[in-house]
Length: 132
Image (cartoon, rainbow, N blue to C red; front, side):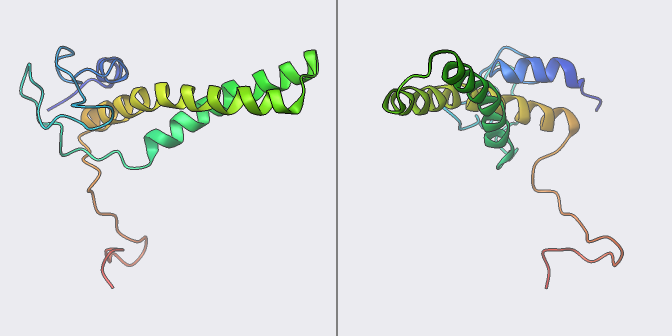
C-alpha cells in the first residue's frame, strides 16, 4: 500500500496518527498508542529508538548555541548568570522538541513501511550481523 510521506510527516509532528490525522499518536509523553483510536491503524509496533533524541538535540543545539554566543558578545553577562539561564532553556527546549521529533520519525517510518525491527546483512557475505 502506497503511503504519502508529506501528509504523514505533517500529522506526525502534530503528534497525530500518520494515517488519518485525527487520532492521538502518543498515549503519554513519548509512548506510542498501540492503535489509532480513530481509524484503528496499528502504530505500537514501530520503534524509533535513538533517532528522535538525536534530532531534538541537533535542533536545540542549533538554536541555543547561537543565542548563547549572541548574548555573550552583546552583553557579556557574568558566568553565574549564563549557567543559570542556558541549561534550563536547553532542557525546556528539548522537552518540547522530543515528542515532536518522535512523532515525525514514527510517521516517516509508518509511511515508508518500516518497523525498526528490520534485519540488515553485512555487505559482501550475505550473513546476518546479529548471528555469530
